[in-house]
Amino acid sequence: MSKLAKYLNRHIVGNVFERPSILQAYNSDRSVLQYTPRFVAFPETADDVRRLVRFANQLAMRNFRLPITVRGTGLDKTGAAIGDGMLISTRRLDKIEEIDVHGRLARVQPGITLGCLNTALNLHGLTLPIGADPRVTIGGLIANCPNDDLASRHGGIYHYVEQAEVVLASGDIIQMLPYTMRAVEAKTQTTSAEGVLYRRIEQLLDQHGDTVTERTMRPFDTAGYANITRVRQGRATSLLPLLFASQGTLGIVTDVILRLELAAPSKRSMVAVLRDTKALLRALDFIKDLEPAIVRVYDMRIIELAAVEGNRPDLLEQSPDDGWLLEVSFDFRKGKTERKIQQCLGVLPPGTFAVAEDKTNSVDFREFRNALLSFLNSTSDDERIAALDDVYIPSYKFADFVTDLQVLEETLGITLPLFGSFATSNYSVRPSIDCSSLAGRQLLMSFLRQYSRLVVKHGGSLTGGSPEGRVKSLPGVQVLPANEQQLYQEIKTAFDPQNILNPGVKLNVDTKDTIRHLRTTARTGLITP
Ligand SMILES: Cc1cc2nc3c(=O)[nH]c(=O)nc-3n(C[C@H](O)[C@H](O)[C@H](O)COP(=O)(O)OP(=O)(O)OC[C@H]3O[C@@H](n4cnc5c(N)ncnc54)[C@H](O)[C@@H]3O)c2cc1C
Image 1 (cartoon, protein in one colour):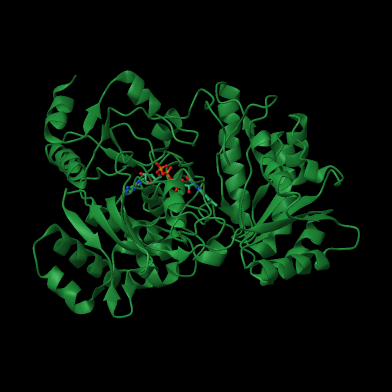
Image 2: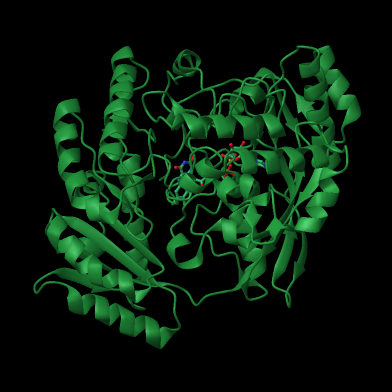
């Protein structure tokens, strides 16, 4: 074991490992990249995290580079949960510390998963209403701030975090929450790391007022430190918004106070197959006003490709083979949900294939949802890569985008059936690409360039669903205006002067280095949406 690892193990309660098999287990996330860390640390307390970060910061001041990447479950799709320095896993920081049932609040550590938290909360009739994979951690959710499937109805993780404890790059721990102007002024008078940070952010807000105002015009786009627009809140100031979508580049969350909601009645859904994009959009124009919890659309080719795997859902046995599959879910009480579903069925063109969920067919609905998994994990295809997932396409451009996507399929010679959430306007395609061949990696690069151009052409954003990480900030894939880049760089420097927290993520992406780290092997295990 190296001197560094021994030193760190002596100073923390948790462990630091450098065993090759452990490093290898943490060298990928869900992206197309691969970085092998030098160490993997499993802190057990916030103080462990503080010690690890302070150590890396002291090394940086002596010109020794040990970048830090914090990681929850590692489900990031943009290469932001991997790095070549010290990877800090929040796996052991997974406790629910307190649930205040009457106040509808919970205090949790960042490594608790959404699924475990909601299982515990449901026992008290409470929930954190985020429509994401139950395996994601609360720390990962805050740092990626995805536009989750329930976000159009419930607002997303941003609206449920009251306060966060954060380890800064200096190793200092601060609480992030809204403070009054007077409290902020008192902080800025001190020489503490927190005081210096508040002073600098206040200065940046004053110096870059126009850029901050302009940035509010792109609320659907999470690129950069977009939430700088929310730091000043009336007569209060809070650094908390900056954490959202910061992807571990500004600080490490070690404790969170979450606001909760009463558990909603279980969802009920309906599915329909619309023959073309025009019919789909006409139906959605009405359905969107019914306050659905989830509205998802799938190119029917996904169902057809799943059928090749033997997984054509019974639910769609009699449905047409092409067009769009529409799934709408409501989470109102029983009678209201029933009425809304009937209203949805009522607006479909005569003769449309449609099924409403009831007691007799709920298993069929579950089976239908698994068709997407069959498509993503087909035996006859190469890996269905999450290259540029969850892009934002404005609803009024959806039809034009779909038409141009067909042209791109012909140009690249690959099928790109679209799926995603109409309610949040975030969609994905999964090209089937063999990353082990040079030709495959070249195809991947062409896809990144041409697909991103298509998204921008239609007024969309690559970073609608969640932030850019490494992959979506490759030059040529996404370009931010110069004034914004400068502001974000200055925010980053204020938080992390030595650039030790997830360098190369979001800002200053080294194109050559990133391309050198393209995976050359297919991802193992289940490919998930
Ligand atoms: C509708 C929808 C759209 C989505 N779109 C995307 C997408 O476009 N891109 C994407 O990557 N994922 C997307 N996701 C997936 C997912 O929400 C996030 O990647 C997920 O939140 C990551 O959780 P995790 O625990 O796996 O975090 P990880 O993958 O382990 O980490 C994610 C990021 O969070 C940082 N992080 C983790 N813990 C902390 C902490 N304690 N403090 C500070 N930073 C921390 C990491 O450094 C990393 O940058 C989407 C999910 C949904 C539901």
